[in-house]
Length: 268
Figure (cartoon, rainbow, N blue to C red):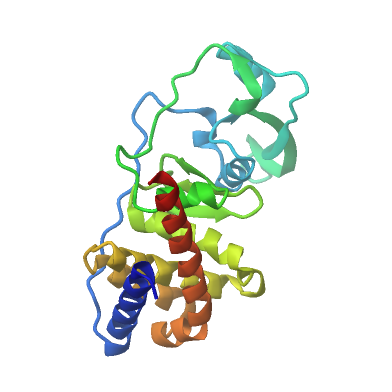
């Protein structure tokens, strides 16, 4: 084994031994990226469902045709809209009070366009990327992934995600371990094994891999504590869950560190 393989093996054994000991390691607190005042956009008020539709279309700012005109931009010729859902409201008399009130009777499609499909007046776009990117950032590009940092929305239930169809990694935290978790998802797909795993199994692979990477780079045990709790929430017994997919984990980490080594050799 080369030096990287030895480090990964030692870190994997250490994290698994901590799991097996039954010791509950104090988890690290995750921080999120907050949007500064004055940086609001229309989608800030969208439902979580519509917000996720927007993200899956590869943008963090989408608006209607006229909304873009109002800020001095226009939709490029040939650009295609995507559809979000808006409530269909009607006015109806309340049989008990006699008062007229608006009620939702369904939903209608609303066409919106991505910022990337418009041109015109420059908009001040916030930069959420950390000043110093986390270790292994170069691996994401080598795997064909685009990494985007965005502001956290209070209705979100996640800190990041990997989208295989677009090869996007979107993060709403600058926490390195969250990046490694999503990077592991991408690497897991490169092994050809993720496609045959269910969601819980894929989450175990990604989270345990992130904890191992934390150990490789000398981070404290807080990420191990987070991994224990995270895996338990998805799959129950953390040790059993990890052992069931340990082969996937080993291959996923191999992809990541082989790409890291190749990047280092090319830079030398």
